Image: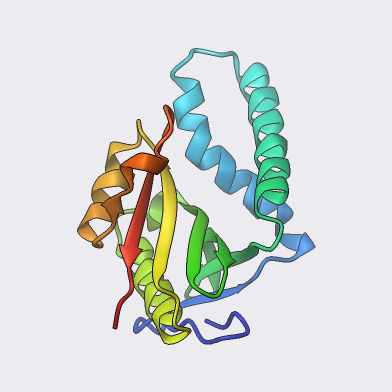
Length: 171
């Protein structure tokens, strides 16, 4: 994986590359695979569900661009096929994971762990002190995942909808 600096997973099947315009359909489908199940529980008709997903996708893209304009959008590849996306904002002392999303077939298969460990190692190599992220308070699976990786709650930065978490990167 290369980000202008090296982010390398020990798993040679996993790589990161910069997202390109041609990745837009994949990114929309990925968003739908993550949010669609949540929204489907509301019992919306399929056409309405598609409309809501399209609106929420556009809102997410615009929100990320406004809040983290320097963040780099990366496609996660496993065996050269796209399986996820990492939106990463890198500052000198703090790297922030804006978004990490995986296709259903890549979840619970070690992909997220490998990517996050590689990002933490690269951040450490670049002398960043902290790797941070926000996770929805309702996303228990993600919270457990990040805790297993060593992330800790930053209670004073929490909101009603999101927990703020940090991984100290001291060498």
